[in-house]
Length: 124
Image (cartoon, rainbow, N blue to C red; front, side):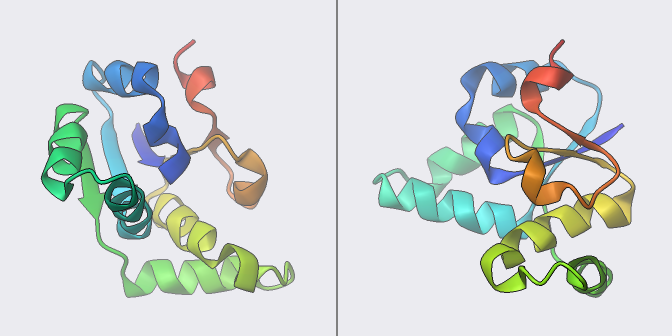
């Protein structure tokens, strides 16, 4: 199984510890990584510290590509909330293109995806 993480999943130390012992491929979309970098810098934490934490949890940052951009654009048609949720569509498109499970605390923003789970549901 491939897991794609939303930004909000990275604040739960229990979930991050749980990820360390998993066999799944764990991906963090570049757009989510941007959000996490911003939050770290805002809290006066170094990007090196962030990188070490991601590596410890076996989280790989993956780039945003043309196929994902197209998937995000197609997903938003008919929903008309792109201006408010563009980053979520970009993050979710990584899961969609890779046939992965989207992991988020905000399932509503990713309701257009077939496989969306909250961290606590995965840890059961």
